[in-house]
Length: 179
Image 1 (spheres, rainbow, N blue to C red):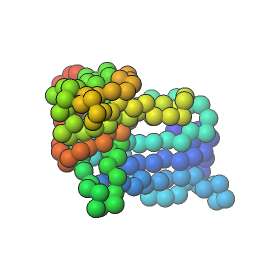
Image 2 (cartoon, helix red, strand yellow; image 1 turned 45 degrees about the vertical axis):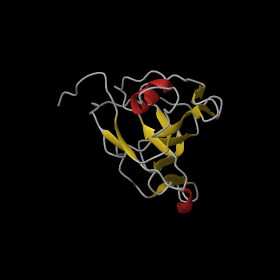
Image 3 (spheres, rainbow, N blue to C red; image 1 turned 120 degrees about the vertical axis):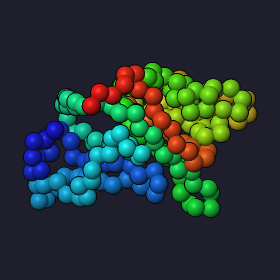
């Protein structure tokens, strides 16, 4: 995006989330020495983690990303209260996925959105950069069903999913990958 490790014209921070230890790793631009610093991690698309990548934009830009989505299983980690860790799983949904709404993800993982459809997850969120706020679709334990904003899922979106147990989910894609 920048073209060099010595410029920050469009963004000044990159984050990748690790749901296992509930922490992000940062790669950021240091203005005092005019270069990018930090752990230069590998972007792990189409892997068991496929952790979401977050960019802190400092100006408008466009970025063309090209490739092929493979069917990949994502591992979700549930941490009990005694661990002191949260259960935030920020994941990149493949560009070729079949999901168009938050409820599509819930139905695929849980099998529906009615009573008892919270055995694996109970919250799906999406960051809205225009509003600087999350959109939330969650299981309501009082009425025993999913409520909230059944927001649109766009190709490549990074969603935050909160598990209620540890499990593996194979994301469905619209086309069979061609090597």
